[in-house]
Image 1 (cartoon, rainbow, N blue to C red):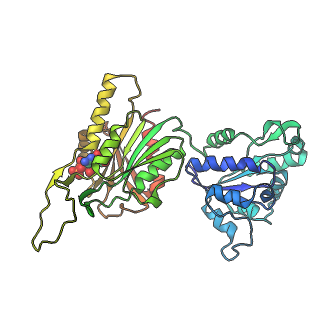
Image 2 (cartoon, helix red, strand yellow; image 1 turned 90 degrees about the vertical axis):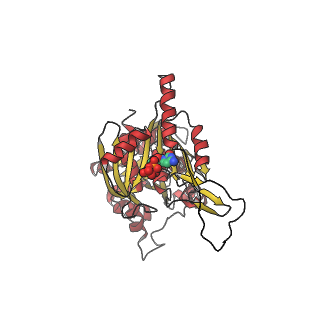
Image 3 (tube, rainbow, N blue to C red; image 1 turned 120 degrees about the vertical axis):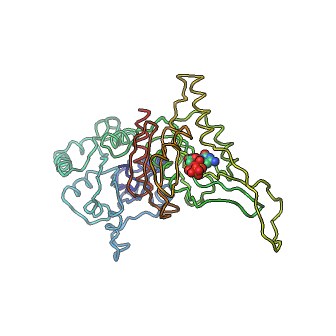
Length: 406
Ligand code: CTP
């Protein structure tokens, strides 16, 4: 599973400045990164830089939150401990199981994979003691990347350089620690709920928070996709900040329809937004007043955006076969009673490739961090998903859907 919670340990080598770029690239891919520098790392790159880049307070001392045990707290939430650069000294201390600073104590505590990116002078790297320590760490299941070969800081040349960032990403991918299966793909996600205004202050809306769509957008970005998130009335604090996600904010079904019309080339469309089926026949220019009598509101039907989009997409594909009109379309349905046959009928009516059906019988889905349901495809097969976090569910959905284009 893609690690979202990464602890980036930085030790006292000159390559610490290269780790700033590594940090930015991890953030771009949707990771939540806690930086833990050693005291010597802070001689090369100060805490202000790490905090500004990560958007988080750094932790650098075992003595800062003694009651909670800082290393235990950090270790508990870490899904990947990445130590870059790792000096010969830090590698030696790790091999001995020392724990006198926060980073080494964290490394002894974590249950997650540990990846070490060494960087040092080539003679230190080749030294028998360093090599023995690296062998010890590898025997314990710690992943130690080979340093790159090339010019070193003092003018010498050899094996010891901090690798290029893309090489680190390749290494993580090769060890199944960072998925890159969506690199080069374009993913469009609609999320949230549309609002149909009745007067300047009132609207017809729904309970959708947008969390599931946002989770899909983040998961796709973390796997390398360029993502467009069309966000219908989502609270700003829920919106992702990843650079690879462009956000378009919409209010009503008509706004969403306009934005969907400009979506032409895409690999995957996840139509997770809850779209209002009706809107007020008249939009009152001023706030409606109490009249002392009952009030009836006339509603008119909204178009089925998904069905229209899917039909247009098919038509374009028929007219221009072989062009990039190959996108996979996933619809979403929230049903009070879950019935595979009804879902299959809805999938056909919408003309989509997949339909994900959330069971909302107990209302647990809206605004909740977890979700479950089943995904059916146009050939009739169905995959069910237990209740799980919307983040993990998103990865699981992408696993199934991404196969359709590979
Ligand atoms: N949808 C849409 N336009 C609408 C209504 C829904 O594009 N006017 C999309 C939703 O974004 C979702 C899918 O269609 O991906 C299914 O939504 P749902 O509300 O379950 O579909 P309806 O056709 O409205 O079916 P129902 O009668 O069960 O509400």
